Length: 230
Image (cartoon, rainbow, N blue to C red; front, top):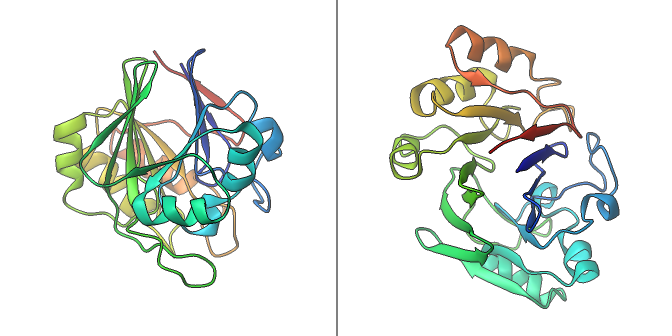
């Protein structure tokens, strides 16, 4: 199984029989390593953490081009349907959705907001628990640190955790490192949501240093790089 970082908060997960894109913001992203058409090659599903445009990104174009389903919280899924996405899978907190090929997805809370660029409410923001090839990945989405991360660790014991570190809209490097140490010290921790815009942290160097000081297994990935898992 492979996890490829596509800049900002976008990742691609593939295991040979199933390929999932999460938060595919590529067009207009200053850190995307490729255009969406290349990133979407052989993709079977898209999953979204929330409705901000830097996370929905190219979802509509990808879903239409590949004729594939999009998993999102109910209000966001229905918003996508109104924009021509024919196959949506409505999700909400707590329930686990089987996507086939042994892949499952569960929505967990995130402390953030979620709306379209026009201000339309698009449901609560979420983190994603993705189980694939006997590996569990927690994509935290956009979030602040919060105490129920302890429950996420207890319930799902993620092998890989993706945490936003850019500050301004999410945790900054120091706070994210504290979250990693306190809640996910046994996981590989991948930083996301930085360097894309001037208001975000320009790199992940501080986060890496903070994690190393705390003996956290930090795995910084440059856009386009791949982390090979089980």
